[in-house]
Length: 232
Image 1: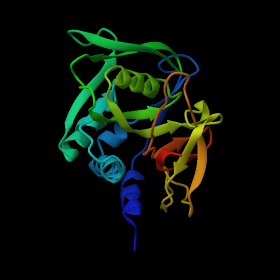
Image 2: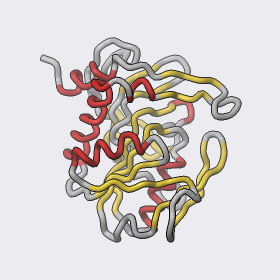
Image 3: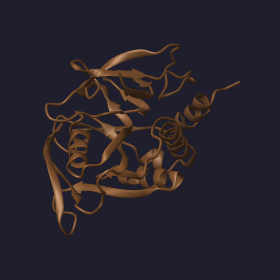
Image 4: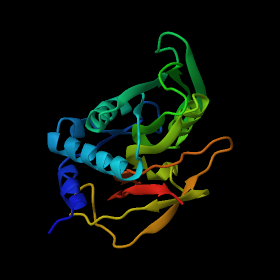
């Protein structure tokens, strides 16, 4: 009998994630998730996995925090499932009123993340969601924003990891990978049968406390399915 993870992944495998070279700048390979968004089964499978993981590992979550811009696509769906609020973290200059901000580095340049000062209250428990983990800079900046607001980050969720950029690569704090059997397909060459650990970066002034749902891991030649659990 198929496990719940096999059933979810079967839906995700029917989607294609397209690659566009030299976008948004030369030397960058852009991963396009639009086919997932127009495939209701694949989209539901991803939100199912996010919901299950949050309910299992993030008790008492009060807000979902979505990152500009594609975190806005998955975040409200997850927040609705969890019956909690949704908060935007945007690029600098996009939000009205008093804001807090943190500068960070992207794989293709510099940026600044911003949140409205009254969006998150001190002590609130949040999970952060985005479509992609590249260098980890955006998640780091958002964790710093939450720290400024005195909120508690219970976890971070992403759909895709760009493995070659080592967002979960060498010299990083240990992360536990939750394996799950998978069907053969474009997003899943195979599964594994036991827990294993990979490193995840710790930061000078902060850290990413949890990245529990990286579903599709890209490298230069392969795309494998994983499901990241909490820091150990």
